[in-house]
Image (tube, rainbow, N blue to C red; front, side):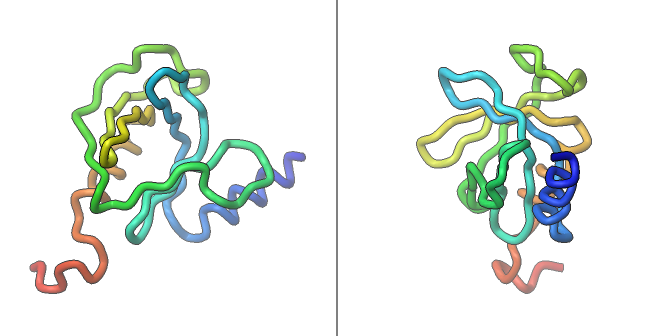
Length: 121
């Protein structure tokens, strides 16, 4: 089982940033998982399980992040997590992740998508 979890994690990363993050939709509790970004999408995978497909996926151009704050509930294995409210069209949800991971996601989100504006200096 541990070998499978290790191999799955390595395959999900596939050369892209992969970090532990929790997602909470309105009316539900946090679900711990793996967050991956690259190209034009932010993807969230369940922490354990056989699936190699993302459970949730958001396009960079439609995703908006608000300022980080403290989580409203304690998240196991993430004592220093920050909570970020996200808007994706009409959908609103919260991400809980380490402060350094929040900085990485924020930087990725604010950078120009590949091919979007090739004349950025």
